[in-house]
Length: 416
Image (cartoon, rainbow, N blue to C red; front, side, top):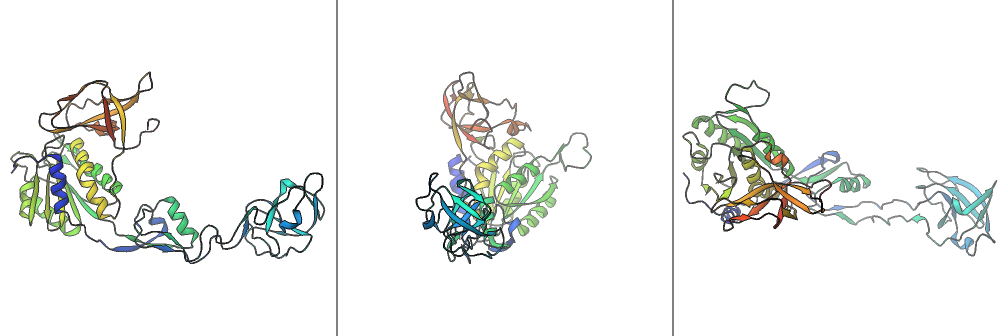
């Protein structure tokens, strides 16, 4: 099944050349379920925000001109004619020589154009002494000063975070149009794999990849559809893949892609429709046996069964396609510069990704220390790793103390 291995760049280009970005459409989501979704339309405000001019301090609403020249030695004296509270329409007007007590957030009463802070006043019954002059609109947030009616507030294609959800709530919206989430079928293969929650027979392991990959799909903006563990049986695997393709926009399998007598996945994917398998193994470590096919416009990633290999290849090759289907920008992995903690060797003729943990030495240098995994199947390797160092095919090793670029799986608290 395996032909000449592709280089990592060749694999990337081949996948992108066959990938046809589909418009998955849009749907309405209630506001609290729109978080981390992609906005499918421009949002135009139907009202001014704030909808009224409001005080930004506790104090007294006044006519600014009546405080001109006021200071500690010669205060302006005004008569307090009422109180304005939050959430109520002012029942008082500020006339010549008058002031109204007001709290933060309350509407500015008619006749006033500024607010004097309470700290700059002294009150005796209804008589108010103002010791500091204010200018027009001082301590006032004017109507529409934040958002004006008719203003395009949020643009189509924006990823909605907590701040954007707050803006939508400020506009009084309860629903918003968002791009549909790509459905990604996830299934595991292998006679040695058992679904979590079931008894663990001798010689078997629990299904790790389905959970780690499904979570990575969510992080990428997709929705995983778990198809369970499929045995190494051609008929069962073919049936599961047919079903997965019918119900999802992309399929990701793990296991069954090497050269063993029961590694059927690439053969079956190739038989399901044109163009079939387009990547027959990649000159990388870990992840060499990865195959990628297309059935019509739908990508099928067949990842190795080893957890570290499967998740790393997902990050490198599958994640960008899910992000594009979800309408998101393709996220480039963040990198930091660090010193190699020890010598890192590459696999001859293969792009090598060395898992590393970041730490500071006594001189406060950031050190990238290789993680001893023993094998790409070590379960905790990616959990321990903060990122990886990429060694090109034509480079034998990275020496200790040599500066390296570390691609980060996540932000590292206290480090970067």
